[in-house]
Image (cartoon, rainbow, N blue to C red):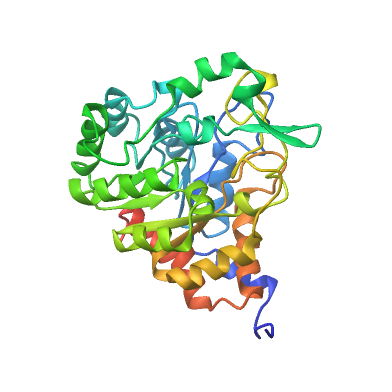
Length: 332
């Protein structure tokens, strides 16, 4: 394959203008997992790069509260936030979702957990003597404290009262999008099916699900009305490095995204899947904010530049970073 003509650093910067990063972790975090920048800095950098908006994500709190504060300080720019249903909020907690709808600037998304899904919590771990060992095997108390309290989505039958109430709240607030969170591919399919059944307008298949799914599974969820997320963090060099992503206990440092010992596929795989699924159905973001990675604005530019080098048409890239995230957020 020949490299396309017209690629340049300047063009990658130009494509940031009007772009949206739906996955930025620049909110407060644990001292054991330092951040690269704070949410005010992230908003200013995005604004100054000509971006349209960013969405703040926080595994510990409703980031729409942080967004409210940022929007009072940073002029001529608006950021959004939402709620990730981790064990810090009691996992499937309808009351937390009700509060998130109105808290601060109001939630823009509801996610069904990151580290607090049973699928991820039961697989989180690290390499010990060259072999990958789940934390639940290393520390029996981890299973009781986290795995047993994590979110499970029934893949058949009735959703159950808590999940049903949460789905109804999201459906009743069409400005909020549903994020599958880090559930299994089968659970994500069920969530997307339920989202369609309950009338949820905008749905996103989280990048952790994207990496674990087959192209056929992703295509099925696209046909059910979901966007597919690809974040650069899931395909970068820091993925196999154990970090305290969620747990304050240092001993629970774990490998993220895919729960394996290496980055699988890389950006080429992401680009090939996007082309196969159709750029109209996918969104790219960074998932940046951790101090081992570049600042989110630069991360998004790098993702754009990598896709250009892989020959992706500029029109498709604009869909991935502008048109589709704007649709997901209900901005257009």
